[in-house]
Length: 232
Image (cartoon, rainbow, N blue to C red; front, side):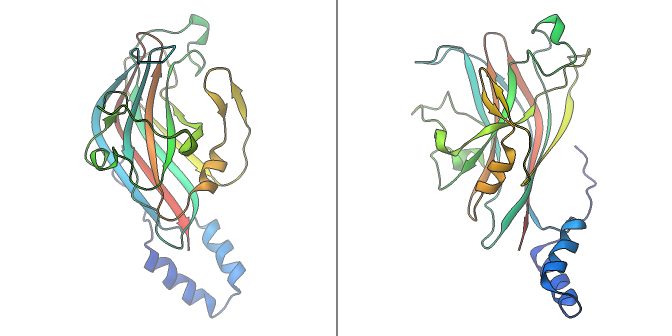
C-alpha cells in the first residue's frame, strides 16, 4: 500500500478553518466548501500481516466457510458524523477455481470481504486489535451478531485477471449517498454501503471480515487499511 498519503486534517485543523471562514461566510456555505475540498478528519487503522482464510466445514453449517476478522478501526469520535468509509485491501485467492466463463470478472468467485459495525466490546475485540482473528476457530464459537453485520460486501478479493497468482490492491470507497442494490442468491443484498455508513455512530468501530465459501476456496490477505472520514 502507498505510504505517501495526502494530508488529512485533524479535528483541530477543521475547527480552525471553520472559525476563519465563519467570519466571512454563512455556516451552510462553509460546510459545502469543506465537503467539496474533501477536508475531513478521519480515524485510520492499518495492518500488514498475511492471513489465509480457507473455507472449512463448521458445525451446523451446510457449506464449508471461513470468516476472519482481519482488522478493526479505532472508535468513531464523539460528535462526529461519518461521511465516507474507505478500504484498501491487498489480497488474492488460491489461484484456481471458478467457471471459465467467469474469468476476468467478479462472478464465480467465492472469496470476498464484508464489513461489520462493532458496538461495545465483543469477546474477540481485544485480540483483533493486535492480530487477525479466526472467528470459527475460537474456543467459545461465538460469531459477529447478525444485527451488526453489513448486508453489503466491502470488496471483491480480486479482479480475476489472467494472472491469478499475483497480489492485487483494491480501493473501495463507501459514501453516504445512495447506490444501486443487487440481490445475490448466496450472499444476500449487495450495494447497501450507504446504509452501512449512515448507521455508524460515535463509539462504533468498523471491522473488515475476510470470507470464503465452498471447498478449496482460500481468501489470502496480505495487508489492509480502514479510513473512516467524518464531519464535525
